[in-house]
Amino acid sequence: MTDAKTSADAAAARESLARARREIEEIDRELIALLARRVGRSKEIGTLKRIAGMPTLDPAREAEVIRRAASVAREQGLSDEKVRDIFWQIIGLSRTAQTEGE
Image (cartoon, rainbow, N blue to C red; front, side, top):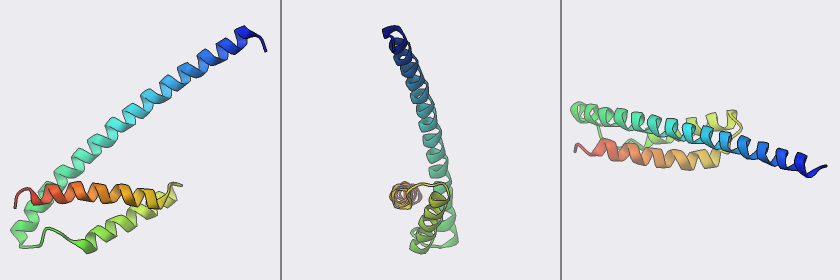
């Protein structure tokens, strides 16, 4: 292989890497927007629970959310354990949002 070809291949790889990173940055923005949307709905749910006289925390519902997330993760070829960990963090955000108005 010539130095020129090696240099061209390296330049093309760097450009592809930059494109892939920009795409990941966009996906990250989309994920954060979805989290913000979920937290907004959680606030609404917290208000509705208070009006209905229901407890804010619902461990059975949280377990159901975790099971569903793990199942979807497996369907997508992702580690269900890692996705469970992520969803516990998301549930924590939701809990905080639901209890803010108490």
